[in-house]
Length: 336
Image 1 (cartoon, rainbow, N blue to C red):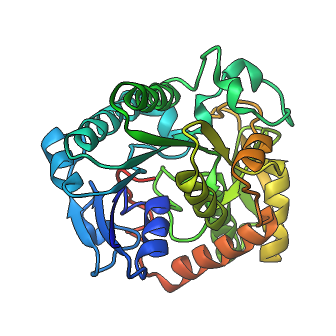
Image 2 (cartoon, rainbow, N blue to C red):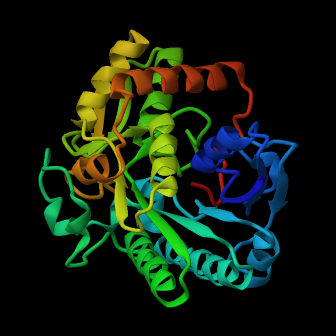
């Protein structure tokens, strides 16, 4: 039987990769929605039903959820630390997307709904040091998430829980930890650290500058998950029988300095680091504990950071040096 799937935020990074995963499945009919004009979608496919519209409008959510079986909500206004630190109100307005999609899912009798949350929901007091123990799903409470973006994500998680309890809608929630890879933003202010550092290294090498700017002292730590592992983990959670919240992240924690060293090795180019201590930094350390998702869902990370960065670096290098698609991947709007 053919199933109809709605991907919200389909024009963005994770949404585009999810769309490409389903697009050739003859048993799947795809509906794709994103606020960006279609010419700025990172990946777009003619054999999907594509809509450029604002999902903060309830009437639009009713339109795209009509006759849909399954919903993947990957839509939100977000970016790297520089963006979410300086656009808290805009980030929080994404709560309207989740609220209206959940209402529309009930109205149109959709069967299952996945919400993409974030590691930014975790209690900030547990992330004050570098190379911290991985964060367990229970570490989100007592609540003290990232201001703005983190609060929106945590509230929306609870919305999903209560729509399950009150209306019987099957919901799934995944907490993404710093997803990276090709076919995503690498310039313009919304890019995350792996893409930003790859871009800086490529530009430095092209101009033989032998230096790059680094936000902070480079000692802050994170874990980063390659996009293919993200898609696999998300689909495993979606197909499971559990409505619990699960981490989808890597346990391979590195400092920013260490990640730069990896990119130097990939690029065969060495740089000095110009530390910018006045830039937005976020928490001091963050990583994922995948014990629970491995036990309950059977998902494990397959791609090492170096392997994922190698693929990402070469893709960004191709975009920059060919001069193609620069506007598309550097002037993103609402995306995941």
